[in-house]
Image (cartoon, rainbow, N blue to C red):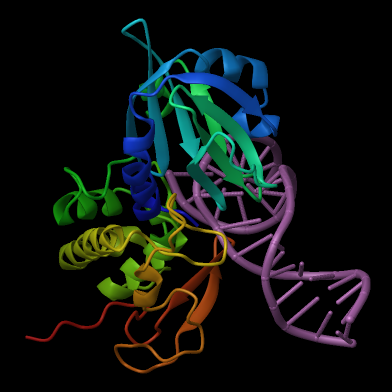
Length: 282
DNA sequence: AGCTACTCCTGGTAGC
DNA sequence: TGCTACCAGGAGTAGC
């Protein structure tokens, strides 16, 4: 599941290969991957120059220009199994490639997506398309004080709230489980009962884990996900709870437990993450 | 407001 | 070995 660190890794590796290039052709092999209308996608993309590539939440935003003027954007979302990679024109096209964009230097940008959940769509106004996203967890105003105020203004369980992209942008199943464990918070804790020091622990955990994962080029959770260079990320070696059900907690040795929260597999240490806050002594 | 269920998809794998 | 059934899940949507 590509989350913020994986998408950031993709953006960094892809940027030098596509920025400044002009799209000279589009080959849509699965219409739903571009939003369902292959022709309008091609009209938006072909002839435009890629002026920049940014990450926002789990989206890749390819900003387009025509004749020196802004001309919309391509928004990419990898969802479960999406991958972007740039290949030589004559390179073989894999069986799961959904969209091909030919670039003016003779290379081709491949959007590959086994499960077809990912998207690469053309939008006239990227700002509007991304307007409902919450703040980036590695940028202001996200910190302990902001998080405490935001958590206590809602009445939701911590895990679904942290997965809500309108609340905080970029977290997914893996990093939420890891951050809650690091902060010692149970995924079912009601958000409005989180205390300031717990919110600070959680904000710090989120930022530290994301920064560490970016440094390791993300996580490779299964055989699907690779960076655009084909490398696996390295952060999965540092998972404390994700996909470790039955294994001992690396902190306290208690067995990691898997529960289901909002139809999502959720991993936690029952000893390190009690459902009710520990009484504070002194 | 917040919850659950459902949809989209297919490779991997558990169970027989 | 070969088959089937089920599982993983991000985001959007519907219904309560």
